[in-house]
View 1: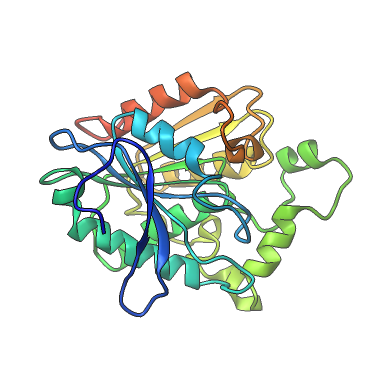
View 2: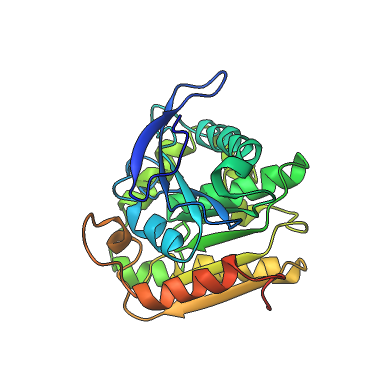
Length: 270
């Protein structure tokens, strides 16, 4: 593991007991005490990597956080719950090493786009249920939360197409019928959301995940969770977030939302 944080992204391997080594990339430099974020990339559970997740990771770092992006195990070789358990082990590692990574008492956040948003929400529930580690907040960007893929926004984006990469991704990720009922597999179906950390939910007006993201945000509010939502026009999300070396859509506005959320001295207003 690197002993200092490089100003540019560097990929290493995170080796944890009982797990295969996972690629890890740290973005940002420690400057006093600042937000520490575990970031999980998209890819419909079956693809994606640290390069294709760098758009959101860099926006988080530019917003003032130290960001650790994780290359979690992918389906179909690694179906539920392997990615969630690997993510939780990484979250515990971040908490244990947060002083070195981001300063004494650094607030710990989760963030993810598309399938990574699902995993971030699942990890927030897992951390709540296992009473550790304490989380300062969760950032969900165009989160992939509903395996039915039957919302109005999904139909608007896909038209008459029934099969798509998200449907196939869910099929590869949820290999057993009972998996759809597990809150760590499908957080949108969780019966209990009280105790979820403060959340920032971002979606695009043309985003197929728009309706499921906003519906989840509303369920969180009803459960008494502090939630901030923002809907951006014409983002091309979630696919545009995976473009390597391309400008991030709505970058300035998204970065502003992230900075306000990550650096708030108290939970952001609903």
